[in-house]
Image (cartoon, protein in one colour):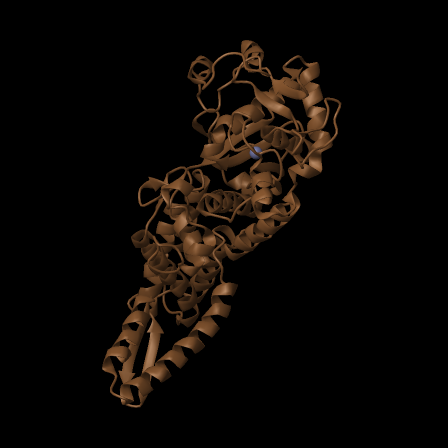
Length: 493
Ligand code: ZN
């Protein structure tokens, strides 16, 4: 029996608003599509959360024995400043301001995005398609929707006819929006210059004279509407129907609602079987936004160079912090919370390393089979990473008491515990051991260097500086003990 037959994985399907048993269309194959970033700026916390969430899903599905095709797109064209098909293309604007080619903007920020993903130990998706590389597929889908009568051409652009679609299908079923409200709340309700109704959205937009990113089409030169790329590319790589579509909750409307409408209009049925959305990130209780001055990039977190940050936080800490909350809850970033995650991660990694120092003995009080069951149960319950981490901390407590001789564990159980802990910590949660150890060696040498300098500082009777060095190291979880002939230090566990 495969692991996925032994484990019943339940996931919260945003479309049906309930937890459902995950049953892929064609096991062991699983198709997973996640909306990736629009690459016109640095990777920030709002990118990190979906990346970590769907990395956890990808890793767990693979562990269960599924063969997962994970498609995560890159938006490099067509994402306009406003959702109402107005404003400049975000990438074009950046290119204009910086006097560079649009593709230079794309490449620069895509490279940086990949570096951030690597730092967070996020696995690469199976396919990472660019919207600009799939213009023909998008044009073909727009034509298909036109031929089914759910779109119309207007002045060189093609718009989706939301009202006509809603007469047969349900526009708003994912996000819970009500079409009548959308119509009456629109900034300029009713017919516009080009649209039959302002709620209609672009499948293809005519390019103005200064618009550089343009492609020929039967409707004239233009570019695809933002929502179309995901419908066209998911269909190309995962088929007419596929298992899971993920993304941030902010994409539910209009992006994912429009994706559903496009696929249903083109083929008559839903493409996606399970919709999954990660909740939003807040900072000190506030929504993150450029205008609010609390917009924090990953690089600023890794270097501590943002006015809201007391210090820098490692990629491992950021990842652990994200995993300590369930993906469906909001996640509030604050220095206190990040500091607590940092200490928690040191404790957990310390326990994994301490396993190698335990002398096996008689059977102890810890029930390893029970831990295994509880760990799987946590993951099977809609990727319950916070519950899993709580069980891992229980295990860490046991390891520490076995290490100090207060408890004991047999050699066979020790092996079992070692492999289980490594499985959940490294393979499934995707916390990093290698980087940690490599960094650990360098960090250890730097601590030695600093403490040798401190000895000289003390010999010169500069006690203020010597105390400061010790206190700051304590802040990093390093305990310094002064000895007659030098010093000793250890990481707190
Ligand atoms: Zn998308």
